[in-house]
Amino acid sequence: MDNGIGSVDRPKAVRNGVVACPAAFHTSSPAPTIPSAEATLGSHLARRLVEVGVSDVFAVPGDFNLTLLDHLIAEPGLRLVSCCNELNAGYAADGYARAKGVGACAVTFTVGGLSVLNAIAGAYSENLPVICIVGGPNSNDHGTNRILHHTIGLPDFSQELRCFQPVTCHQVVINNLDDAHEQVDKAIATALRESKPVYISVACNLPGVPHPTFFGNPIPYCIVPRQSNQMGLEAALDATVEFLSKAVKPVMVAGPKLRVAKAAAAFAELADASGYAVATMPSAKGLVPETLPRFIGTYWGAVSTSFCVEMVESADAYLIAGPIFNDQSSVGYSFLLKKEKAVIVQPERVTVGNGPTFGCVMMKDFLSELAKRVSMKRNTTAFDNYNRIFVPQGLPRESEPGEPLRVNVLFKHIQQMLTGDSAVIAEAGDSWFNCQKLKLPDGCGYEFQMQYGSIGWSVGALLGYAQAAMGKRVIACIGDGSFQMTAQDVSTMLRCQQKSIIFLINNGGYTIEVVIHDGPYNVIKNWNYTGLVDAIHNGEGMCWTAKATCEEELTAAIETAKGKQDCLCFIEVVVHKDDTSKEVLEWGSRVGTANSRPPNPQY
Image (cartoon, rainbow, N blue to C red; front, side):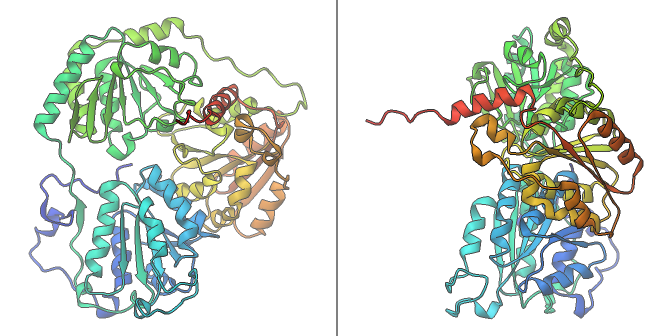
């Protein structure tokens, strides 16, 4: 989602990648000063977060960040959301960034930082700008050879910083106020420009100390938009048009990096202009409207939606925008795409077949200009072929009265719940595959974490996404094993008065691990899930729970949940441990085979 940063047409006063917005220059009066009591690092950081679009910071208090949290709370445009643990705070910032374009979390030194690290790594892998703020040791303790608590017992305080370096695009440790203003601004600007997490450590004794650099209201800043090299853009367009003009049945495939390139609208524009059949990679679901006239479904190799794989892999040319090809998206490296048939469009480069690669070409510019060039030679052949062979997907067989609930029946009813005011969060597991088959109405959001695939992500991500997208009712599909990892922050959802609907799919274990490689470690202890959520509720906030073991109970629960518009609804769905989608069985077999390849011969 575009957060509005980087919309300046004629940037001025560039410094460290930060641009003063034009409005700052067209004023007849000087910028107002800030009262000295508010001219502090903590207040400046809070104001900057609000300026870039952060309204909520997900936090866990600790003695090194308490003063900083006071300043975040004091900022009128900012709300502090206290989470049960740092991991969920990071997941929440991830989910928030997906809905709003940028997210933030605040934790304490080392014990908090290393706890949130896993979530920050996930955000890095998914190209999400998350600002991770850590309350650090007193500035006087650095270099003193003292040993502090919340450390590993060494006087070197850099361990946390070193851990964050591989999973953030920029790191700052603020131990003095003279350059703190610049350090904060550069870090936030870098997060937005690179669409990656950043790490900001603030010494615990600095947030409340006034300093002259904070006396004036900061000039509003915007990110310098990257510009295409015009010669490179023209060359890439010429090569691509020539390549595609030779194709009989070209197709287009949307990849997950459409988000970071902010090119989803340009992709849709090209789809409309070209006439090509359009598919999405699984991790791009929700980025491109599924109501496009020639949309054919999800391309996921052998587990694609019906008839999509045949159209994509039989095409004589495919334009793939923003792909991530890994072992899971390629179904154990088993898909049948050929490089010589592909135009691969990444956020800043274009590769045409086995031929040249054109750098410094922005995806958004390229797709928009390509739409103009191919509009005179529309080619609907692939979609026409799709229409000839397509057979509508059948519905699950009717359930007998009282028959144990089946997963395909559950998702039949979830499909009927979706509107443009909905969003879907899919947890790692069989929900990945069942949710891919949902047909999203215009405006319906969809998120899952495919690249990193951290089990338990969805609880925190649901908290953050729902907090950012308050106009939507979010439907989360979470497996029992995943829920057991991060269940605590259902309580934070209640504190925030969220109205999501959680389907807890209770099948007794880690199903996605079972289909890859089974063993006793994939069986978990069953919980009384509705009882747990009722205990968390404890009469405070709006919460309703139900348990469904058959279709009649599920239907009644869904109708009740739909009527409780201002209430968090939790529906435990009990299914057989072997009840899975056919896609997860195929996918698990292929990924398991890829994982178990013997080592190459050693000479």
